[in-house]
Image (cartoon, rainbow, N blue to C red):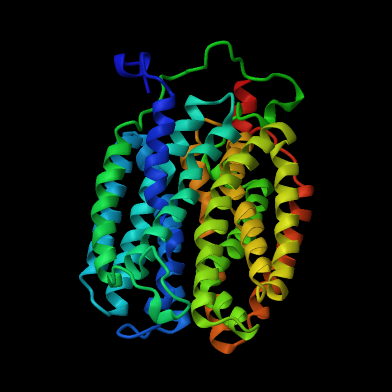
Length: 440
């Protein structure tokens, strides 16, 4: 992009603000657990697995559309038009779901396929633009932008619970939760309109800096570490021929599998586990809603900021090692502590915090290893691992839940996270691609 009057005087922090607005809307996909109890009841009567298939398709559509279309399109046409289109597609998907009544296929098409596609179009735009505007603080700034995705879940979960159950709990009985009484379809309709409007507004700030832009007073690092500082650019094919790409892909896949599994089934698992330990149905609903709607969502957002900041100091490699190891330990524990309210809150907090870190560390690691210039086209291919994890994790969780065997979901996920930590520990920056070496 060449310098224009718009970019010459443009304050780069407007891109951050626009990115956060966009991500707040896109994070609604993480509010899916707020709908699962309603969808497993009349008139919908979906199985646990059915609820997770919708969630999984949304995540897969998100990742595939970002990898195959959004990355290249925003590189060619700029992030503004791609983000705007994503907001419209996302909003349309939720409106279609709202018009579908109790139809599984209608909600699958609307929230799953189209909703995920809209997220996939819009999601990469703030990341691609911000890495170019903030080469001096990539980890922190990408974490700050995508924190909106995590905090968005907190907002939409609480709004959904308010629309269905109301803000005030009048008695200890389930029947005493008097609320607005909105059904799921009506909520989908409202959200579709809000998403289209808000993402459209945020897209106005999505512009790239001039070619060769550097923040005042900042110079790219030099010396032996430059190969991991984003100054050597790989294209997609060059990147995918490196073991570092496949290492990042595997680690992100494992982290996504664990985190998305919990997002999808925390209310279903938590309700069963807490009721088995003696809590009433109404108390279990409130506890699991708090675990997901407050602890998981809040710390998912904070994890994106704090892990990004940590990685700017500790380094991306050791941050990924630490994050993966912690996630492995808590996933192994979650089956045993989830039947206690405090244990459920602790598990949701730690898993959400670590899961959020993926979205700060992996775009920054992609830029470090394969270059700042092409991160908008390279990162979607790394992010495709999230889509794979989004199919494996939630469906595994839903299927084991239908069988009454939750351990077959949590324990393998925990072990895989520990393996991912070892893989991360063995990684080192790739050598510059041959074409770059020849030019140099």
